[in-house]
Amino acid sequence: MPTRLAEGLKTPRRPPRSLQSEGSFKVRFVSHGRFILLDVFLDISHDRSGGWALHRICVRSEGPSESDRYRYLLSRLDDCVSFICDALSTHSESKPSAVLVHCHVGQSRSAAVVTAYLMKTQHLNLQDAYTKLQNLKPDVKMNEEFMDQLALYELMECKVDTTNPLYKQFRLKKITEKYPELQNVPKDVFAVDPAQTQNAEAVYRCRKCRRTLFRHSSILSHCVGIGASAFSHKKTRIVSDSEDQRQCTSYFIEPVQWMEPALLGVMDGQLLCPKCSSKLGSFNWYGEQCSCGRWVTPAFQMHKNRVDEIKHISLPALK
Image 1 (tube, rainbow, N blue to C red):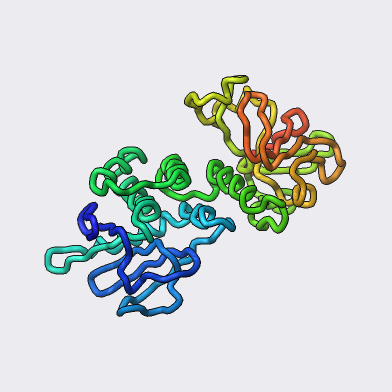
Image 2 (cartoon, rainbow, N blue to C red):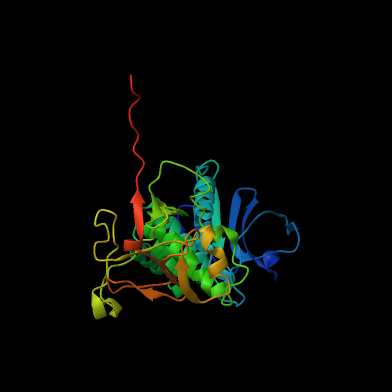
């Protein structure tokens, strides 16, 4: 039997028999009269099953193993939460509506979606939302991977922001897991070369030849470490722009298009200016230690004493 979690929101242990099938991982939003199903399950090979109308939204599989197949649920949490909210918005005494959230076992994937819904709509932190869910459905047991993704979801204020430095770092970590040979890496992993386009954002140039290398938005924040204690399990904090990362002698950035020939198929190496070939820093897909003590994975490190920040200043028109 489904467990009632909130008005109109339920989660069962297993999906309806008519929807059990094999296939690739997808998220499907299913409508059947006044009853709506959010299916975080496996793909169904046909469009209609037992009278259920299917609307399929694919969640990309980012890894070859069974556990890897479910690692990118984070990218679809906004879609899932919006669907639940839209479905329940029509609820009334005269016209009741309900949403059933399910997955194969009813312990992890569906639990992650419902927890995200509670976090966003009831303004709960991850721990409180998950505890509320466990109190109502004690058999849920979300895996560590989904807990990490929901922790990131919370840091992004319950909105998936692909421009957020934390999200970029998360995705880069997954790239190293998906492509251990570091070949055929998706093109969108690389930031646009700022030398090819112009905007008002601050940029960083090679100190020797003045070639534009990366934008300010490409800098990835990381937790400050203090020497050896950086590798302890103590609570850390995120470096903010206001602190200017004074303890760090390098910028850790997302990979940029001009780096692609040097990065693919190689675990680590030097980062050289694409124009004058002067050494700018180094990279290691499996991580490097910052001068503050924090280990950053993966690491694309640009030494601050090799680049200059250039800010664009708008001047009022002269009369």
